[in-house]
Image 1 (cartoon, helix red, strand yellow):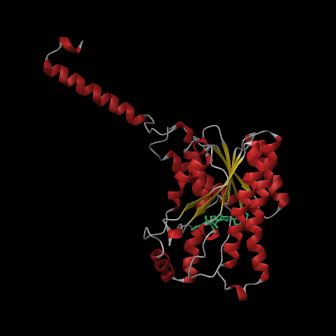
Image 2 (cartoon, helix red, strand yellow):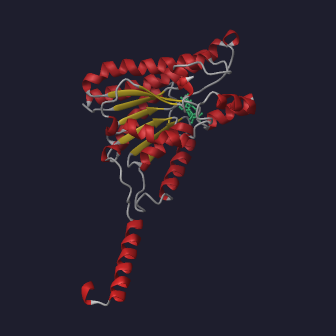
Image 3 (cartoon, protein in one colour):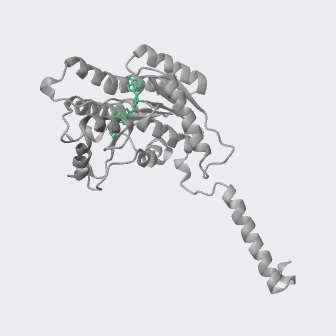
Length: 301
Ligand SMILES: NC(=O)c1ccc[n+]([C@@H]2O[C@H](COP(=O)([O-])OP(=O)(O)OC[C@H]3O[C@@H](n4cnc5c(N)ncnc54)[C@H](O)[C@@H]3O)[C@@H](O)[C@H]2O)c1
């Protein structure tokens, strides 16, 4: 039809159709990426998801189409995290306006075997199954070893190591019994590999080294069943944990840390989103027993 019109009319019709298709495109999800990065149809459970890195991971999962369980000490904090993530997602222009992520909060102290068991059963009852587990609940504190109270040492290991193990065990049992090719991501740290300075944190470093070796051990035990286990080892990420630590220790600490990072800055929690989605998705299908270090180059020096 356009060829029967005058050149001016043709140009104006062409312009109109380009405008119309541009307007339509802006309402569609036009992002292109490898389909294997999608988490649609998967249920992801994240411990410590009321704030910090855990919350960031749950946000990334929901943005990638997953359903999710937010596990943390307080139900109220978990619900507030879920509300915040949902609002954040609905404000994103790249997400379809009709998309509301299915997220639920659960109160659980990861150091209690009984609470972990009860929480696991509730999550499976609510979602039917769990595909991905991320253990982000963790604590850090800095004390010189010679003055470190033994009760604090035990607490550090209880949360960071035992809490990771209890969720790993519940997940492994569920995946083996139901023949699910599950995916476990333990949140370790660059401190599992290197002693950061100047803060003295033997207990934290040792706990994270234990988490990483737990991950590699489980990868060998469960790999033959198609279950993958890996550890994420972040460098300094500016979460509430780090902000609180800096408030206690003083601003000069941050300046010192930055000098040790080849990229010259601390990381933003959102800079782990791509890595965690890759690790949780089928895009990393041959990744097993690895420690993925995301530290701006800290461990190179
Ligand atoms: N922030 C960093 O720079 C950094 C770097 C490397 C590794 N990590 C690790 O990442 C994880 C998360 O750190 P973050 O910076 O987000 O910390 P954060 O303090 O901001 O968040 C930790 C969350 O874990 C929860 N939690 C603590 N004890 C718990 C328990 N017993 N049961 C259930 N939940 C519990 C807290 O309530 C909190 O919501 C930790 O394991 C930490 O060691 C953090």
